[in-house]
Image (tube, rainbow, N blue to C red; front, side):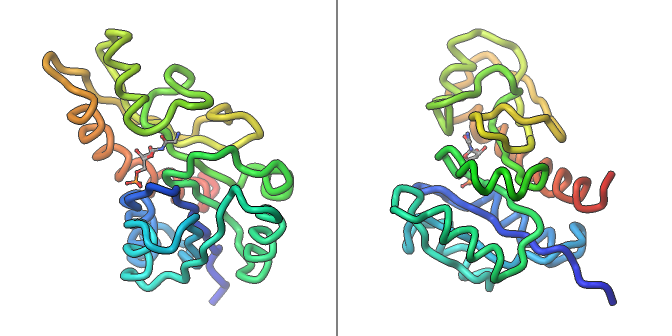
Length: 195
Ligand code: GAR
């Protein structure tokens, strides 16, 4: 049997890890023909890290603000022979050295229809606040390739939903998160299969 491609997932400091969990279970079920090898979290005890351990993943703690971060991350990727990298709630700019080495193999999910409502400082609930403030009638999520700029890479897949009268940032976030949970495994499946 040929070896399955190997996936690392990077979560954020305040990450809940719901997208990460969807990706790991999609790999485990075979929907995504890949192996969820590694979860990298900035802190040991956040909900994402706890959830990842409960799902049996190898969890490594590496703080993007620490010195030598990108070299240590790259060492981990080499040790685990990682083929694909998924950012799931990772809010920092991804190190350019690794973008260079993994070009076209790093994915991110953003809770809006890019290119609108993206860029530096635009993450989590702030995105949904901006969507409501802009008065648009449609929002959604975008899975895209990662480049050296925030939220700039080519889109792989988008999913959209209406913005409803009476929506709050939280109600919008919940509706979009449901889309994210379908879109991210589907996008990973597409790129792994070369579709
Ligand atoms: C998700 O909504 C994701 O789209 C967002 O962080 C959340 C993480 O949730 N990412 C960004 O805003 C990136 N700019 P999760 O920890 O439950 O997966």
